[in-house]
Length: 134
Image (tube, rainbow, N blue to C red; front, side):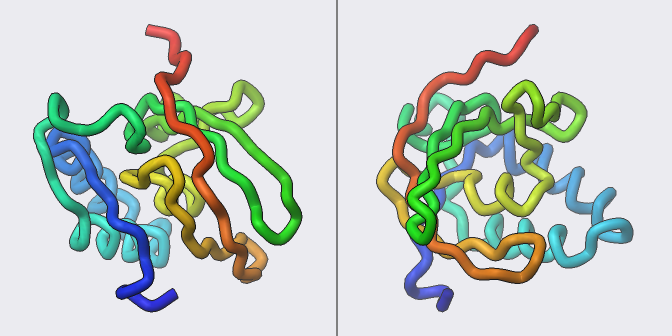
């Protein structure tokens, strides 16, 4: 998807600081994913956490999205890598879908590339607080 057609993303400054550290650690192990995350961060609108709207996907957000090709809906809570557990519905921000979702607002449409290289159009349907154990 061309850069002009990508939806706006908004990320909390505190999240950006942590993501910068993660990218540095992931660069050798997952260079393509790290590069994609850096690209997203470079175009993000950065705000203090208190100013991030409730309908923007952040760490700890529970997000539901729809694959426009299949009509399938999925829901997960976006988390830091150490909290990820896909069986419990917690997706790491350091996964292709995590990188794609971070900073998006409910209603945003975006193109996503699956692990097999297939391009899909996805729509963020809902964003809310997640259920992450303390």
